[in-house]
Length: 372
Image (cartoon, rainbow, N blue to C red; front, side, top):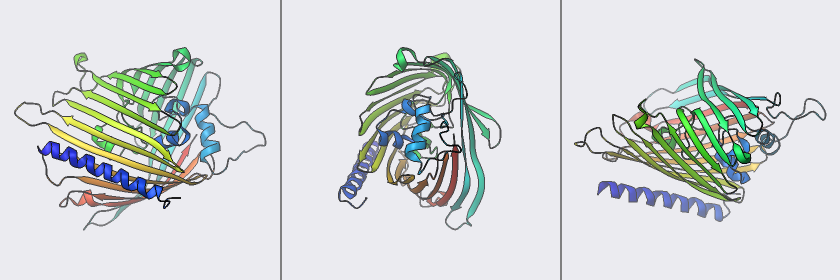
């Protein structure tokens, strides 16, 4: 009964939040990343080499960032060709570099702050057969050690209608958010930090994008492979999708379902995701655990080059523990003065377990993002 009550409460609070935000928007008081796809009415494959999003941008993605996201496009030479990542017909490259300042205040503790390079990533794309066969690498080069994030062969016959991917890859599940610390990414364990080895089959239709991946998962035993399914229906002003993930594990199987959506209302692009996660206990004498988490995010393009991102997140990590619900509120201003450069300033407020100070912290940060 407690599980049912929690699920009803979870749905009710999320629907109330959606209704409140929509009402505020419709009243006129307001006037990854996935929100850019929602804003433009495009699928992830339009702007990224990886059809499920993230990583190196396609030539279209580079030009879209240059002409639509940046406040202005700067050319070093008159009539010079814009950068699209193509070095030759057979080789393309790109990079993402992020760093800045972060400050964290925990109740009854001194504030901790730091300047740091948070991530530098290089992308290499070898085109064996244009529009058909390529080999793709996504490498973290800093900080600390070099780390391979993605390395796969990509086969896209019938003009990209079908997709076959084999190697190490990010799993298709939920929204491909840039923030790996979002609750829906933490709870699911599917993020840019957790690639897996296997094979992925995809289908790209005018209004549909769907993927099925079979990967190694928690063990090397072929009979315990991890299964990931995801599909999204895309329209110019809205989209809706669902994902499923089954991960066998000797310490307890995990099963996850997610529904997600994006839509535009005037100048604001919205994202939403709901996740339901069940962790089975290793023995039948122990109860399973249900995790519920949600996200809703609004992105307001105030002016060309300026975006205001406001996010609310909820997570109930243990269905058998009382008063362990957690919330995270975020407000981030993103400014892209010229192509390849984005600055971000944001604040986050965590509301969590009353006697756990770290889950009730405040954060603010300033970040510089350089990409090409």
